Image (cartoon, rainbow, N blue to C red):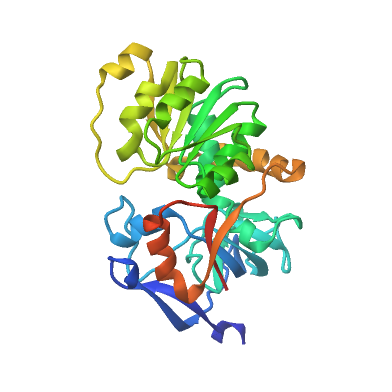
Length: 328
């Protein structure tokens, strides 16, 4: 009887440090209700937002205990009533789950389940959800970037950063990216950036300005606003905009910097995307998979029982190189 099957999953019973992520075996495999899909998870993506939620300081506080994660890739095990988009045996990835993706099985609503092309493996499938949908929201829905504009991906070697490089390049933008290591710089020039800069180097912002002949950049996708926002405002061209994708604390800025450029600072939160926006994004990303420019770069892979280490490393490591995933 399938109802009695059990699985391993990460469960969080209290908010706190990475050590609150516990592997529990003997968790019941959930059953898909109407419009839901049960997926056998082969890999799931680790995103910074999951570490913020885990500490209990994020705007969204799940009821305890819970299993983290929204981005899974695997094979459809079974489908609930009324599901038509996918069937048992399909290779899929998710952009949201109901039961959490840090587990051997997950339940997702049909509209959050997408077919995974054969050209991408499961680890790559687990790297699509939050990173690519966030990059699209920042570049298209928020900044309204246009072909021919110059974009700076500030922190370009992680999950969202690599996605933003590939997407920007496909949109006809001039792409500048920063990373904190030589490997990171190589990674981003291999994934769409025309030029790479080391953000640990003294005076790197002067080099960015020189690369624009002093004009500045039209759009900035900012991963660490608490460190960079003031510098960002000074690097913008007339009418430029900064999209804030990540921030880990407060920052001091001079509002006059926005006046001299008539620039704009906007927050990006995937959570608020409308169904229409999500559909548009998915269509664009599918075109990218077909054309071959959308190819997630997987950095470190950890087994499920090393989730604690993955949560530590995504925040503390000295320079991202691709996407962190858990594998089952």
